[in-house]
Image (tube, rainbow, N blue to C red; front, side, top):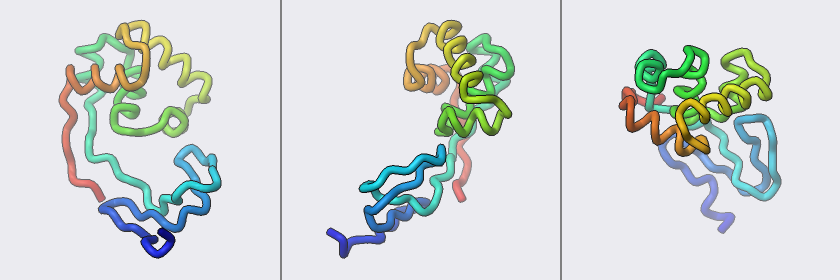
Amino acid sequence: MGENFPLEIPYLTITHPSSAIFADGSSQTGYPAVSQQIRSIRKFDSVKLSKFLRLSPRQCTLTALLAEGTTLTIAAEKLGLTLATARWHLREIFKKTATHSQVELIRLAEATCSPEVTEGD
């Protein structure tokens, strides 16, 4: 099994399974390490999301980032929010959209507002 590494997939390189550093900065020993970040090729228009989901501009931006594959931790950083504030916004989004999880929210965003597909780097 060790002879198969590194395994290269477009936009993703997996090195020897010794430790991994995740997007939120945490790490776990024993998992494959991803040495190149996967780039999102889907972009959601937060203005369209606002129109269809009736969310505030900040809530729409957070929803768009999550739907594009950004973790809540990274989305909070990008928006200049603490993780606790981002979680509060997410709970409010769940209430307004009658969803109960990020997966449900993302499916709703995809169903109501088709993402723009762009070339990944």
